Image 1: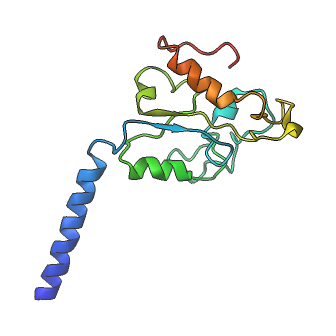
Image 2 (image 1 turned 180 degrees about the vertical axis):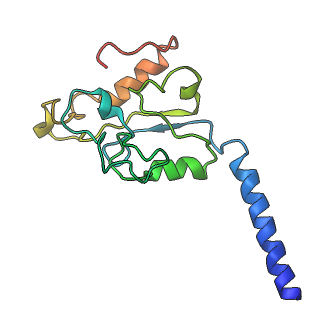
Image 3 (image 1 turned 135 degrees about the vertical axis):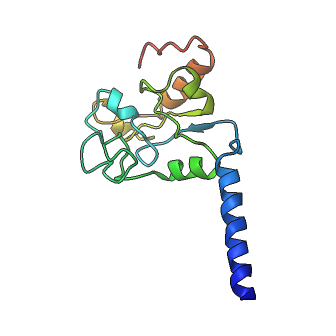
Length: 155
């Protein structure tokens, strides 16, 4: 009986500590995410490009069971990271309607699928070339210098 109680007590302590961490403040104030399709959560949904993931089977295993723009059928590594750090929601795509007001205080996702550092990707219909014009960083600088929360003219 002693071992069973010890294991039960350890499990109870683990569950209580897990709940405290999940419902506490995040370990960092915000997440700013940059990258390509590996971490894109839907920015390409609002760009003129052929590279999109806003149709099935993408998203079928996500919380909403609908396509979100993630190039995955479920959560991305950045979604798991946000959960692990204590965030109660995922960082919205910068070009989405959710990236406004208080929603951006926990961070924003600037990633865009098919972005890269190769001159072959100069046609914005297919991909974004970040070697000459770092579009993702431009969005961040625009957001920092634009506290009124207006959209950038090139978005």
